[in-house]
Length: 279
Image (cartoon, rainbow, N blue to C red; front, side):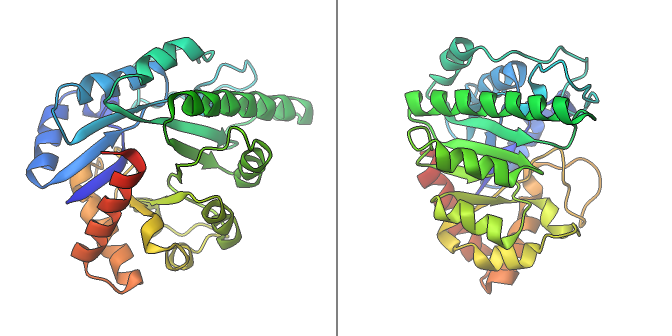
């Protein structure tokens, strides 16, 4: 069995064939967790999950780049949504209501993202403060509902780790650093917090200051999760849109680094996902 712990079949990239993609996945013994990025996509993830008795699950959360800040213009991603929608103000009660379904297995993806940011120092600081406040509110929601957290972090690991360390009463007991991109020292910080680490097709890329092979070697087997982040981050072995069936290439690469068979690594990662998300 394989479990894709971070997919986006709830995005418009799969609008025309989501049922076929799911069928291919389930026929190949691949389970899927569809991750919300705003209210619209969280709701869609839940709708998809409720159509299956097992194997398909959902998370709900407001991605930091979908927060209404009035400080930066984010480029529309047509893979995610077809029509440009207004950035959101976080509505705690609406997300709470959505998250109470037994098909929702986590709050996420939530966190910090400094990739798009204002140009002036004053606006940058305000932008970061708004994201941090949103992250803390969603940590509160995860705590209230006793759900694990899927952490999104881009160019902000130190700020995010600081929040977790300083918010002892809100720090989730269970979490995954999704699509981890960072230094080995930052990896160690997440591991020290007791969190899992999510690896996907980005491990095939070359990113300055990041040694993916060293990070994989450093991550204990019982903390590894595998994911596609589809429709993004397609492994180089295939072309076009990513989907859960390509998870096998991530497994092969990690297994090779860890000195295991693909079957052994897949089983370990699946067990980790079951323990974290309760699926």
